Image (cartoon, rainbow, N blue to C red; front, side, top):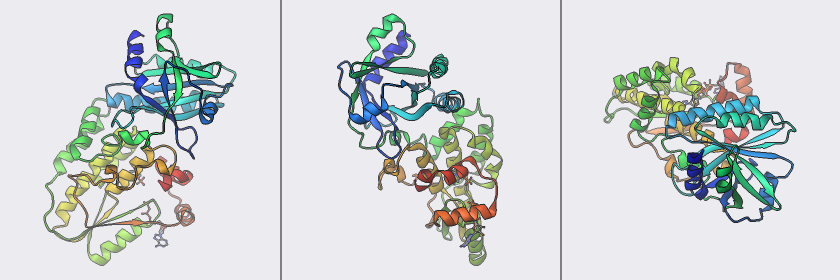
Length: 377
Ligand SMILES: Nc1ncnc2c1ncn2[C@@H]1O[C@H](COP(=O)(O)OP(=O)(O)OP(=O)(O)O)[C@@H](O)[C@H]1O
Ligand SMILES: Nc1ccn([C@H]2C[C@H](O)[C@@H](COP(=O)(O)O)O2)c(=O)n1
């Protein structure tokens, strides 16, 4: 308990918290201080009196464990919390410091039961989970650890203080090498760290080792076709193969097809590293094939980066990294195509085509359909 309290005062107190309270507006930012301060109107709405308030963050030096614990908690909260609990994405971070984000949740319990508190107390038993509750004193609010012994309680009570909005959405601080990978060895290392818990990682790494090839010389043109599902990629890439007498490749490549389901069920860190490695295998195939004929590629790095960034960045479209951000830069060691085309259709036409096709959808495809914000991103 003492260790947790020290951690909290040593690190969290200099941190800013952001809660994705309303998807149409900026997150709400606050810090902790020993001096009470009156809250702004928006903050007062979040900390409204008639609710029991908690926040929960996952800490671990082991990034795989951290990612998995976060995903497990998200799943558990969605299954076990009472219906009248609101769960918002929350971040604790140090402004402008890359990789400083600790992801978590902010929970408003409007129920009359203690179920939410009981669930959170159970979660707090895990050494990597910190749960805080929020209390009111007159017009001020303070944060304290959910379960504390008396000795620690005094030293950890901190008042909620409104903080300035961050220039960049906090989630963008952690995208590099957690959601999007900009060189192969960073993605490779993630799968290496997973081999104990995901045995398939070894097989994927073996395929990467076997297939990797040095970059291509001056060969035939390489054209990538990108687009959301049902925008016509398969139709166009097949037609181009015929008309240009080209070789057609895909990312992820066929040799990873049997592993996709497994990695799709993993948290973003692991899932994105898997798809990143798929791009490097496809790059090796492009290198070989483009010496013989033009190459058409059905999705490549833009798909990987776009899905990853749209998933990682919560809330509104304006939260995305700004145009020109280094996060949109092509990976330094990934073979570049000569041309990338993005196919677009109106949302109505896309839905009509999806309905006509009536195929099974992956979870993320289904999400695209129901989540207009995600598709826009
Ligand atoms: N230019 C077009 N005009 C009208 N319909 C089209 C056009 N291109 C494709 N379609 C139709 O739209 C549907 C989706 O096309 P297609 O399978 O090529 O999309 P896709 O982008 O490859 O989808 P996914 O990524 O989900 O596999 C198909 O029924 C196809 O016949
Ligand atoms: N080049 C690619 C292709 C696909 N992905 C990921 C992104 C989603 O997680 C999923 C969607 O693929 P679909 O089901 O539409 O085939 O695959 C990627 O990261 N990179």
